[in-house]
Amino acid sequence: MYVEFNVVKRLGDFQLAAKGRVEEGVTCVVGPNGSGKTTLMKILAGLLKPDSGRVEYVGVSSRVYVGDFYTPPEATGLDVVLAGRTRFGRRPVGREDVEKAAEYAELLEAADLLKRRISTLSGGQRQRLVIAAALASEADLLLLDEPLSNLHGDWRGRVMEVLRGLSRGRLVVVSTHHGDVLKCCHYVLQMENGVVAWLGPSADYQPRLAEAECGGSR
Ligand code: ADP
Ligand code: MG
Image (tube, rainbow, N blue to C red; front, top):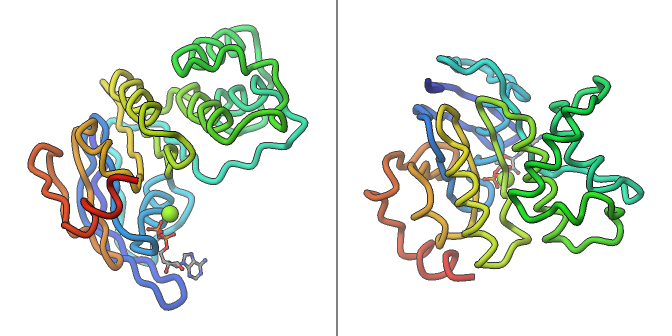
């Protein structure tokens, strides 16, 4: 299974012209702000239509993108994870969905957050629920746009471990500014000015100095 893309998309003054292939496992998408990470991920998710080119999905029948995810303050943790379970659609939920939601929350040590109101949670707790929601979708292609931004170093590593553990027979794409998690990915895809500047196994990735020294240790 894989996703192959060769796409062009213009947004205002910005142009994405990206070509590459996402393989089974965890791919970390890195690159400076405005380099096109979100644009590429939304195209892979089918949420943005490229102006030209195409995306070929081989062995991938379902895809979910989770980025800035609005959680109404009165919602509970369970509501959030269930939203992922229904792939953010409107279908009614059943008992199995609730069980699955609890299972994925447990993986992120968020089981005790399911009954809490979102407004009472910290940014990190909320983020773990959103990640659990994405996982609960059980989509073949999971696109998580900066899921680690509100998590401290220890939690970032634990989340990456969970993602790796679930990445067999699945494509997991994670954008991040944290250089410290790159060793947890199978592949790194580096964006720069709208193009794929580097793509390959994480073991072969040599971060640019500016990224490694400044972006990686925060
Ligand atoms: P990243 O996720 O790497 O920070 P984005 O893909 O979000 O980058 O954005 C790439 C560029 O496209 C940025 O310069 C951004 O300002 C621009 N952009 C994104 N969406 C739009 C839009 N709807 N209209 C105009 N410009 C956009
Ligand atoms: Mg972005």
